[in-house]
Length: 112
Length: 115
Image 1: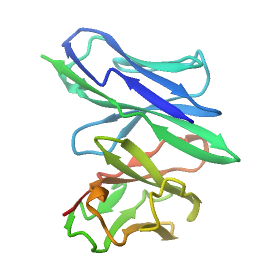
Image 2: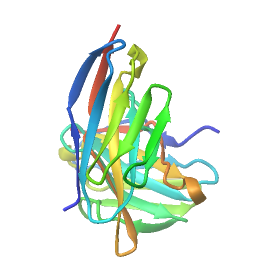
Image 3: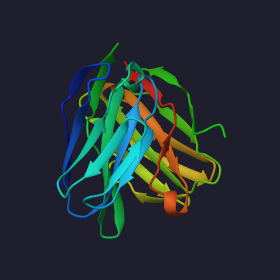
Image 4: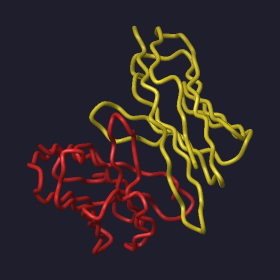
């Protein structure tokens, strides 16, 4: 069964304290891995998409990487405004139909 | 652009009542997705449409749930009859055609409470 697992569930960092969020996946046919940011009371906001192992994407203090079994979202020198829930999702294909599976997210709190 | 528009933003209803959630996707987008989010199960895809045609509804939990997309600018998700376990935040998302079709733009969600 296709599955996406994120860890840790919650993370508290001091401002400037770099860390990484993990997304491990077990899918039959990966057609993309996505990272989203979700603020309380709002819909998820797209951050990155990765398609193949070894691929990396960067945006400001965030950097996403992909291997054959997992993806990492690295946060360098985070600021309080980076506090949010970060969601990982995969797109797979079965009989020509795309399926989208989300992880349950990592709640990040950055303290000033 | 106004983004994805959902209505109502909050809905409180009693068990057994019919509930209709509405979504207006971003103009020019050709794919539309309905999700449900709960603390226990996270974000789950219920159904998605491509060019107004339902492509995959395997995430629709029961026959009580139905979705329609009569045209490119409007979709509804209906629950009839509603049950307390349907309480959740329901999101609609849309994505553009072409190379950026993987990027989903989410609406603000409808918080549904079934008493």
